[in-house]
Amino acid sequence: MTFAELAARDNAEWCDTMCRAHDSGGVFTERAWTSPVRTPLYYPDAVTLSPAATAADVLGGIDAGPGASVKDSFATLDLPGFDVLFEAQWIHHPAPATRPSPIVWEEATPGTLPAWERACFDGEVSGLFPAALLAEVSVLCGRIDGELVCGCVLTPRERVVGVSNVFAAGCDEDIAWAGVVAAAAARFPGRPLVGYEQDPSAALYHGFRATGPLRVWLKG
Image 1 (cartoon, rainbow, N blue to C red):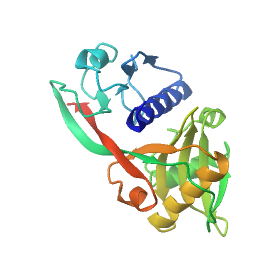
Image 2 (spheres, rainbow, N blue to C red):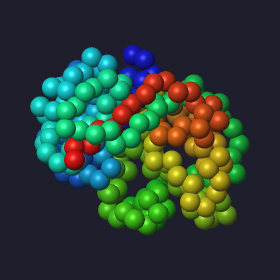
Image 3 (spheres, rainbow, N blue to C red):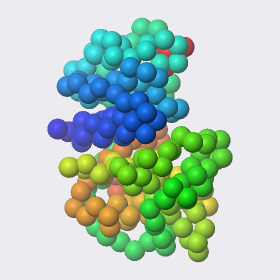
């Protein structure tokens, strides 16, 4: 598998974890992950897993009505009736070495998860991240002098660790990304990191590499 394919697989598994935490769940095939019911806010109804995926591989497994979204992981699909919501880049970081960081990282708990969510989404979202997620992924709070200043989600897989939901709410973005790399290296030594960003410049500055384009489509 290429790192873009590993990143797409990690992302699909993360979407499925989020759906299961909201009492639904999707279906994996060789070419795509699909959810037969509408997914939680910000999460696609389908994610392609192979450059060979077709529109039929995704549209047949979802509610393709208005509001449906598809993560076209290799920017290869043609989806009539859908518009491109945004384009982004998959990113990959070779297994990072441990390094010092001014940020103290801690796992979110059911008690601190609401504060993490408010900081991540600027207070605009509530209840998107149920406590059930904490049994499967690492939701990390980054603190300086006890204050929550940044955060991320790490999703450990057999070959890679997914990095998502990186935010800086009380520190510089560069400090947050440097801290995320350090936190991943400390918790999952020897494993490369994967993810995606619409603007990957901060991640690239901290050792990530762009590994391929993706698109997210939305049905109007």
